[in-house]
Length: 311
View (cartoon, rainbow, N blue to C red):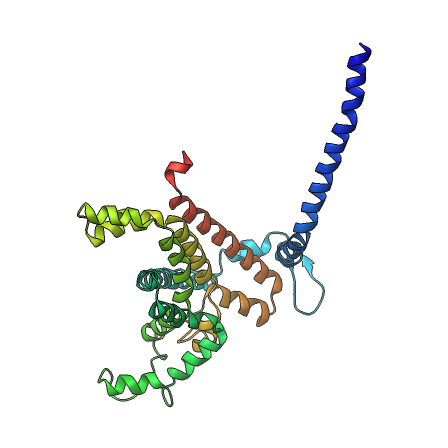
């Protein structure tokens, strides 16, 4: 009995020592992640909480806010301008996503491999990404200027138009010019994401399929696409989210024109908050847009999930 008691007493320091080491290890891990947690708290959690609080108030730019509960959200349902802006944003998102992912995948297929030429292609395709959206929009607005821009003169020289035509004066050419600018600027970013997935595909798979007589299209459909599902899902979520939050290009190049046909959801939130000075209602619109973005992201991830792993 005394021997058992002695063993128990001897084991206590060992258990206490293990617990102490575990606590020190947990504390060290907490200290390592503390800066990231602080950044998330300061730049995400607190602004999000403030926005929710503002959305429940009549919050003018000057003067004291007044609690109105869910009145801003009720008023939102009758805001035809916001729903029209959201409809245009969805329309733009559809075509921008197709253009960005299609071009990004084509560039990734073209630029994969080794060699100096390939490295040059990758650099050239990625260079527009480092340009800020505001700078790229100003550049595009200058290129499309009817008096001094390159595009109207080029279209006239090619015989596409009779004389210089303001391509930003009507909806279709204005919309497509902005969409092309976004594809030119951001396709290199999605090329990098998709190329990381392409480079992770074992060469044995494609070589075996080639030996079996599979065509290039069959190899792309049955090998390449399934194996880049994860990077494609990431690219899709980023592309849709970024397109739904479009603002700079439509504000700088078109200023919402022609005839307010290119006002995006974020543009309308900006006007509501900082032109009409209805900060509380603008916060409510922002929260609705956030919920829509989260829902879209969840649906996309669910559709592109790995069904075998989900089981």
